[in-house]
Image (tube, rainbow, N blue to C red; front, side, top):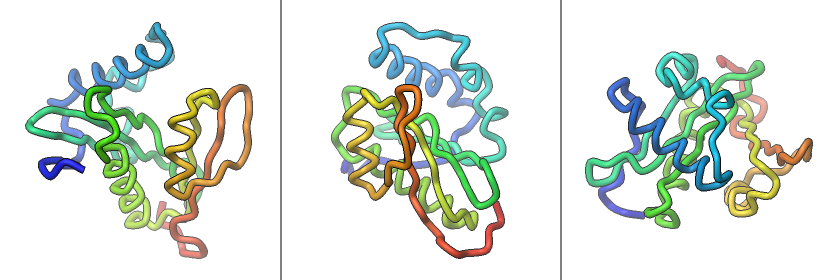
Length: 156
């Protein structure tokens, strides 16, 4: 991992850069972007106010994102994991994911869930290598679970 990498909370002034980074990654993956499927990116601070939205910054440039949002009692979901194409495979995704797991533990969360497209093999492998277990497949997506505070009392 690059030594000048910083993981920090999203700030409102990050809005345009973060939205552009995420949409660029989606466009790279899908070839086209449907704005109707991404309304949460129009106001990230409001959309993720109940959870955690982390930014990875390197040399003053935003290079990655990841969010953690409450779902059910004791359960949070990872969303919007994205790393700029030109800096992938440098541990940035790992650093973001580890910080989100720390955030979940600190919040008393018992389990983290997430989903990704099943054909996105790199993403599926990424989560499996980091201890996430596949729970099921549905409509072209793979669903994962990671137990982070099994048996703890939840405050989420």
